[in-house]
Image 1 (tube, rainbow, N blue to C red):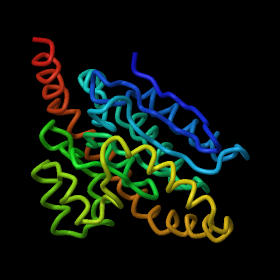
Image 2: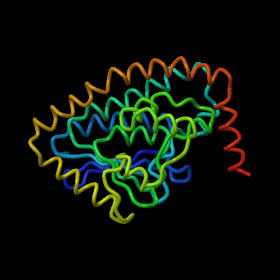
Image 3: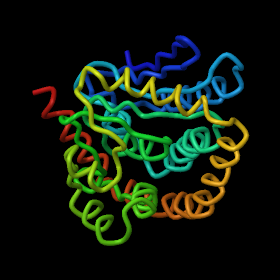
Length: 252
């Protein structure tokens, strides 16, 4: 059953996306739980830093669970995007360091989640990007977040082709802070979270607040645009057809 696991060890909260049979694609309930868990860890005085990672060795998160996408309608869009906004804001507004420990495929909304984290640590087998266009889903919030990191040219290439970057290209572009051996990704992420947590707390928190304040106006505009654009897409039914085709092929 898809779920979110949350553990605290030596002052570091570890949130694990646990749906390995679907490359840790997350459901709406997992997304709700992510927002709640991030907010709970933020106010817990025993927690100094936070790690987000995926179960197993194949994926961090492959994006939205396609079993849910196949059942979406135009009327699903408002609630779906509202949940995502709550998750993204829970990352941006969190006063504590958040490290994405990327243990494999990092795609779609999983890629967006990783981009919002303070740092991303991966290994040579990581592939990262926004493949939504291949599934009939417009890339709107992902486009905005990628643009902030990479600018127009690379963003247009990634959004329009749906191509995933390998770890070397992602590191060169600045999407990955470090590439380490696969067995060291989680340990290195915990080490970095502790290093960031040891910095002067007010300066760190105020800097994070400014990062949020800088990103938020454009992110809100991107979400508003996504509501209208995704309603067109789901009203046409292309994402649902693509999701159904994928699920059918997987079950064949």
